[in-house]
Amino acid sequence: MKRRSFIQLSALSSLGLLFPLHSCNSGSHKIINLEELTAFQKQSFDLLKTWCDAMIRDQVNDKNNPITNGTLYCHACKTVHGRANDAVYPFMYMADATGEKKYLDAALKLLDWSVNVDGPKGSWTNDINPKSWNGITVFGAIALGEALHHHGHILSKEDKAKWDARLKEAIEFVYNRFDMHFSHINYRFTAVYALYFLGTYFNEEKYIKRSDEFSAFIPDYLTEPNKLIFGEDKPDNDKSAKGLYPIDIGYNVEETLNGVVQYAILKNDEKLLDLLTESMNGHLEFMLPDGAWDNSFGTRQNKWSYWGSRTTDGCQPAFALMADRNPAFGTAAFLSTELLARCTVNGLLAGGLHYESHGVKPCIHHTFSHAKNLAFVLDNLEATKSVTKETPVPRTVNDGVKHFPELDVWLGARGPWKSTVSTYDQIWKKKYSVAGTGGALSVLWHDKVGPLFTASMAEYLMVEPNNQQPQPGIDFCITPRVERFENDIWFTNIHDLKAKVAFSDTNGIIDFSVDANLTNREKEVVANNSQIHLNYIFDKESATIKAKRTSIEANGDTLVLPIISKTGEKIVQSSGNTIEIHKKEVIVKVTSNIAIKIKKMQKERIFNQVPGMEVLPLLISFPKGITEISCAIEVFKKNT
Image 1 (cartoon, rainbow, N blue to C red):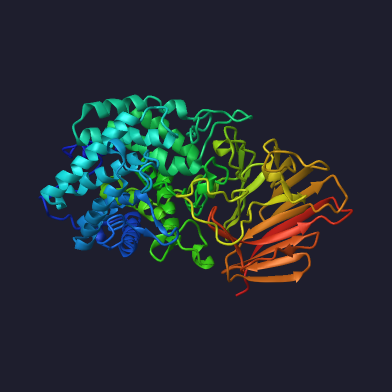
Image 2 (image 1 turned 30 degrees about the vertical axis):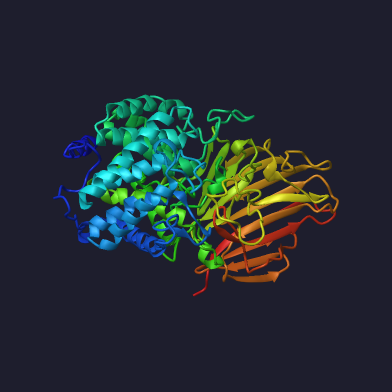
């Protein structure tokens, strides 16, 4: 069995860990032979080198300021992020793989700087403030552990001893502080791997035992029927009014699954690996054909960055390591890495597709987090050599509608169209409003265009001020919706947690039917004529959005369609009811039975940090006497 051969290979390591580099003498380098890499591995290496070089460019060199000297400066946030020392792992990989001294120097300076985020009892803190969150120690411990396990041989004896001692303090903190009620589920399931990995590294049985104890809870945090991980909120098992658990696709695929999969492989736990294969199959349904993770509705949607989530690490370890069980897992790892490359701006990973076109600088946190997992891929060449793009991910080939009852989310597919409709009613910390609910069309995607609609937060709130970038320009929600303002209070269907969705799929036409009420952020329904009915209709040629209301008065009800379109794309309004957006190879044509207006903008486009997109905001207002708006979207090839 292929999995058993993987484990036999891992036994070659004196530590029994995942697929180490070939043994080499202390102080020597394992120079990588690029010609021996697969396409996926070569893509990973090229992107990792780009990122590491950019991080070195932005490394602080100011010996007069020990608080910042050696760390990575974030030009986007105009600050330093406390978790920057996670970059020690990718720097050490590059130092070993290339033999270039600059990478080792960068790693040494970074670890020297990390004393500025030393917290109580061996922890590290999220920010330089010693009272800031220290649960992130588990991620720093894994990064430093991987660096030492794979590349510690290039350090001097003194530096290796110092790093080992600091690592021991960190994992001891995790052992003492973490339990199965600690924070959100991503911390605990990541600790499953950290404790086992470093328990083996240090030959410390108590860490291994605690890891095994934690792992026993894994089945308890999987939903039915799709085995999605829940617990991304606190309390982690608090159900919504609909009885739904807190689930965040971005955190699950880019952080939580990695920990439990890496643990299960190290343990050679076939029963757990079978269960996790089911879970990964469930999560894989949410990957769009371009490698994006659809987190338009997740509990932590405030950090949705199209490719995943702002401060998570990336899906590559879990999905690449499990490609032997389902080749589409490997495709997911490959597509995700390609998307990360497309979102790289000036050497750093940006949080979405349109940072460069809108002139928004990328936060460096994205880069040093995701660089770790590319280093992991490259440190495990044997285990990741089977990764290709030959097997499509489900959303590329699906046709029809699938309902996820644990989310009350529907995924639709017909011809070139992919859609997500959500009435998920979990709200992060019970107070932050997201927009992937209320029967929202939270994603509309086309084979020739990519995303046409994505949900943003209803209001861009800095839920985690040190882990989100400021919003440039006005805060304008980019979720398609119907809205009304009364006494300057915003009422819209995307605030309605009680919306109802049904669908039909007949004669080649998918029709989502939504009943909702215009609701404010406090979940209060507007006093008069609140009912709204929406239809999202798809066939192979077009997508049609219909909005119906009960009132015939001119009360300001407006269908808002923020079409994703980057700066520079030509706009042609051939009539009052028709607008064309000229993209590189195709034209997106929007036609309505009512006049279409473009919202006034400060710049050529409006940008939203969630999920890093520019939009052309189309406004279609109900005139007096009209109760229905119908708007069709078509995509045409340009004439050559």
